[in-house]
Length: 160
Image 1 (cartoon, one colour):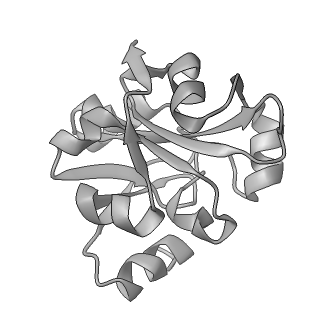
Image 2 (cartoon, rainbow, N blue to C red):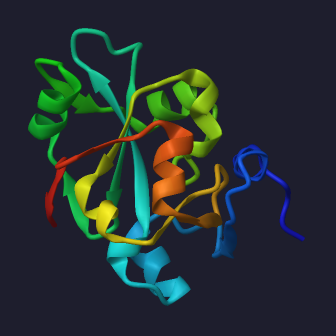
Image 3 (cartoon, one colour):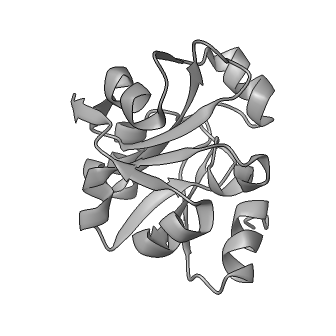
């Protein structure tokens, strides 16, 4: 049985419909997860923890499709920072309290971290995002997701 996670409670509180998708919790690669779930890579969004170099204790969350690569310069520019870098896995886990592969913007709304969603998501009716636990993604309406996490749409990726 699937546990009820805070991400799901948040969506329910806002009357946002969602669908739980499960995959082996040993899998962390978003492209492989998309293949397991039988969905296009551009629908599965990975959540990346990014740190401004001048203030690493105030991270940002960047969500990009499985088949894209984060453009750190573009993210720095839209977030108003001189330079940003990817958080090391251990730092991302320490800051979020979630395991890499299960980091979820929906589970971190209480932290009020800036959330940036890659622009191509705006073309999709639904995206799949982490539920906050390895092995579980949630299929959510894109517009509702943007609203509930306060995401800013921005061009922050390049083709892999």
